[in-house]
Each structure stands twice: as C-alpha cells, then as structure tokens.
Length: 240
Image (cartoon, rainbow, N blue to C red; front, side):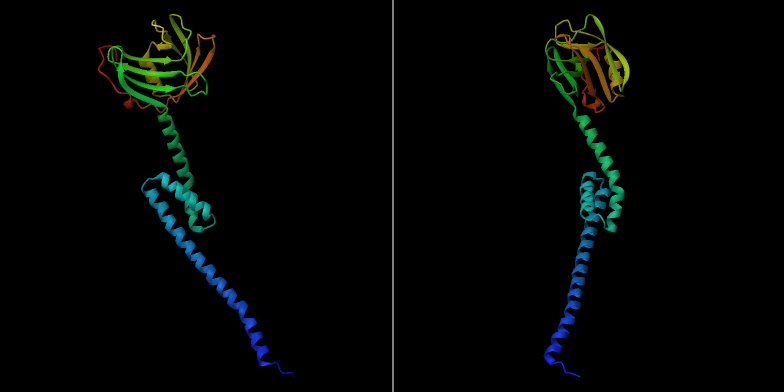
C-alpha cells in the first residue's frame, strides 16, 4: 500500500475541518443575530404595551406599525398585529373628530351697538363662493342665525323658504333678507335651528344668488360644533 506523505495528510485533514468550522461560525453568528432581534423586539414591544397602558394612541400606533413593518414574521409581534387595527380605527376617528371641530371658528369681539359672540363655519363644497353659517349672540340684538355670503347676496322676498336637509332629511328654513342690504339670509326660528344643528352631522341649503340668479347647494359639516365654545353674553330679556 503506497504511503501518503505526512504533509499531504495534514492538508487533507485541515481541508476536512474548515467546512465544519465555517458552518459552526455561521450558526453562532445566526444565533447572535436572533438573540439581538429578540431583545430588540422585546424592548419595542414593551414600549408598545406601555403606550397602550398610557392610552397614548399616537405612540402606540407609531411603535406598532414599526414593529409590524420590521418584524412581520416574528411570533412575538403577532400580539401587535391583532391589536393594531383597533388602534388605527380609534385614531382615525379621533383625527376626523378633530378635523370637524376645527371647521368651526369662535370669537367674542366688539360690534356696532355692543359686543357679539359668534360661532362660524364655512361651506365645505369646493367653490369660489364663500358662504358662512353664523350663530351670533349680541348684547343688544340678542341671538340670531344666518347665512352670510359675498357679492350681492341671495334671492329672498319677504319671508322666503329655504330648502334644507339635515343628514339627508328635508326641512324648510324660513328666512328673510336684512332690510339694511347685507348679503345675508336671517333665519326666523334660530332656537329651533340650533337645536336641530346640535343633533346633525351635515346640513345642506339650496339657495339662489342675486348675482346671475345662480342656484347653489351649500353644505356644512356641523358635528364638530362645541356649544360651550360659543360664549354666552348678557342680552336683553326675550332676545337670547
């Protein structure tokens, strides 16, 4: 039997050991990576849970989305995948409510004859026309509700009936144009209108402009109205 030189045997032995060493090193590296990922997931998951305990939906939403995006297949993240949709829904509802509240503007300021407190919302339809729905309390004139526009105002002779809808349900609003000539429509029954507004999400009016007899559909997303922000004023008896 021919003898294999010692040097050649050594080379063959080393060659056979190298793949095993490389495989072992790769396994150790993968294990370290898995441990690091597990620690990172555990840390971020703890932050997510703390945000939930604090009722901080903004932080929980950011942490949860980040976990799901970076570790979609991690078993520990399954908890986030199950709870995150409810947080997203709640957050979307909160953002929408904030948007609706932000549509209203409140102010207390001097006005001819006294002081007025107003709650104002603009038509939500995209248009060049700017028509405000105004709730007003005035120290001399009492409480009133009206539409206030640009230009020449609205077509309305004497007491006119404005076709309106409250969340899709038809309702007529009796109004009149102010004798002083402002581009406005004053509502006759302000108290009934405000009571209906407080229960509505959207109010629509069909009006006709004096400029070109143009018919316009006005829409107001009113559900963000905060009555406490519309400050009461001292008004004469029977006017508020």
